[in-house]
Length: 390
Image 1: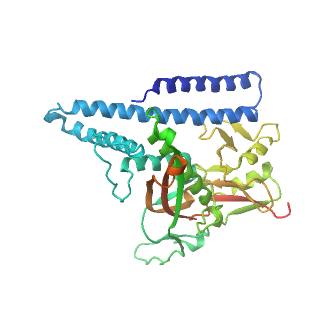
Image 2: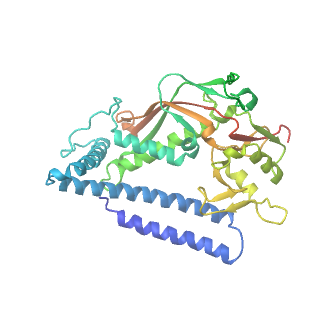
Image 3: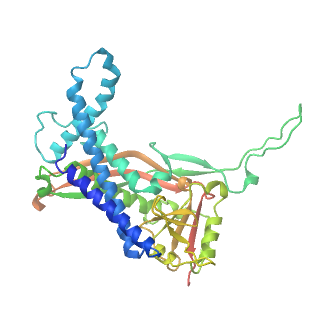
């Protein structure tokens, strides 16, 4: 479907070869990866994933086009196959429609672009691609406990003190059980409106070989994901609390191996299976220099780990939104982030602004979201806070 699919595959193979070369050199020299090498590997990983996403879209569209052409001659026995083909046919048609709409051209084969169910101009299949991309590049959101409801949502939350929860005791036949009621509080999730605006050069719009739909999907998803992540971390400075109201806090004047053990130990063992670390790039770089009593680095390169690094056996996720180590800063989050609740009052809405940026030789694409987030279970999440005056 796309003319440069072959070139993208060749580029991906070259990137993989380069990554293997970097790792092999470090292993042959019996040393850790340098900061520059680690950064290059991270960029290679991101680029390979982006190419795979591109090739996946290319393959899906090719298959959909072939199935649409073959489906006309299908007999009665192909009823189930035609039902499956219908979804791909819709995706292919809406992809072409949205591409034509962005370029402000008439798509005679697929007809004019109709508004989606939510009244916006973006088709449902394209909206789903943006949402999937947001979840993919924002693991905190992906791991959180998600709710898609309108209006106010009140969630019952039990405290960490088990003595206040529903009691279980041995009993004898024909004897009444002692009735107990768990004491719980509620966490209210409402909704706060936010918008993201990206501009697209008319030069790109006019380039027929450029994957304009993919560009818009990625740009909008990246902007929304960064904004959501900052608020989920409680660093947005607005009404969304996120992890900013987490109460399971470990305070220290500096970070060393013992402090990291305390932070990890602050999360109950039952929640350790899916736990991970969140920190800034500068904090991770500082932790790379820490060693245990026998000289082993605490932070390890692990190509099988979700983000390529492990600390005390758990994955390390680096966020540009996280603060560096400083007075009163929440420098590290650790735990199972299903303890964070997020609510979306409506799915992402996208609109295209054509005239507003005409004098800049560009079009605008604006995305609207309405969401809220708060900590639901403080037993699952620990926070390392640097003490004031450290």
